Length: 191
Image 1 (tube, rainbow, N blue to C red):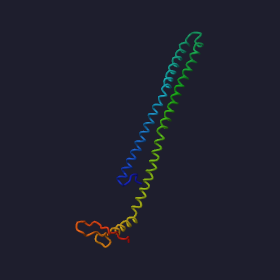
Image 2 (cartoon, rainbow, N blue to C red; image 1 turned 120 degrees about the vertical axis):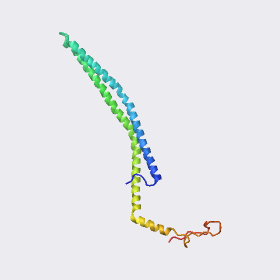
Image 3 (cartoon, rainbow, N blue to C red; image 1 turned 180 degrees about the vertical axis):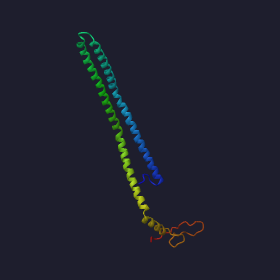
Image 4 (cartoon, rainbow, N blue to C red; image 1 turned 90 degrees about the vertical axis):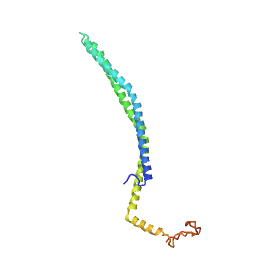
């Protein structure tokens, strides 16, 4: 099955249509990527929160280690720093959760924006091209069958009367009118 027509004008229209559909798809994919990038910026506060929480947790753990070296009261002084470090670690985890959520929303928004126009146009185009290719294949099959070739040859032999035969068109014989048909000229009756 051939994807393109044999007739040059129709093939040119098909190629132009294919090119336009491809450009449409590329344009909407680029729009979807732009939407993804814009929505993906929502993850920036999550990155900042993760970084700040990680730095705070590290600082509090270091302070807890320093306070733990104090004689007699070290373990009692370390406990608040450890619990503050745990809270900072939870804060960093919240930053990671924000980033994950923002990335999911960015992907969903980008795909949602790009998918509908692409699916609609590409789906209609694909069905149209498939039906056109099937129709062209059926025409080629009929055209190339031996029976059709025999009939078309015999049809050409009896539909074209030869010049000067009794069934040819009558033309005026007046000098200067170069064989222009007269009003009384008629086509012969079909055999």
